[in-house]
Length: 220
Image 1 (tube, rainbow, N blue to C red):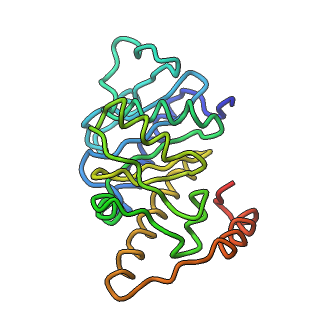
Image 2 (image 1 turned 45 degrees about the horizontal axis):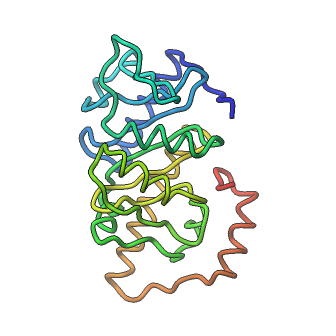
């Protein structure tokens, strides 16, 4: 699908602003998170190991989506560039990928616990649960394969012993999903600590997913 985003200074700055918003919302710590965006020139992705507050537009790395290496003279891309690229290739309607290590998402990921239909907003991620991608070494092709597999028919997943990743058909939607995912994870972990959360039935979730057709930043 043709991207509505062009490789401009404004687009690159928008990625930085999304990183800062993710940090301000408390869904990422330090330099562990990363964001990519499909553009008409390829994939723009945040550089490896850089403080968000010190990033500037020309530090964003432009990478081809055909598997060829990035152009010379650029910074090193995020170590997770492989699953960013492969998600965008597998999901041509999605424009942005956001990865982070939110505390509650990561706690569930450490336990290999998916998020069930404990709240209707689970539907924002495309199904009746938020699954967990199996563990593989960070930055590896194995991890990329497992994440893409977990994201089949989904817009977000947890990553075993690692963190979380979401997609969006816009940068704003992807950022919204990451914040919403951590909110869901926090609520689910809290509910487990005070009792036994009641899970919505498939029929109830089917109703929710239909209702999402009129919901602001909705799952499609």
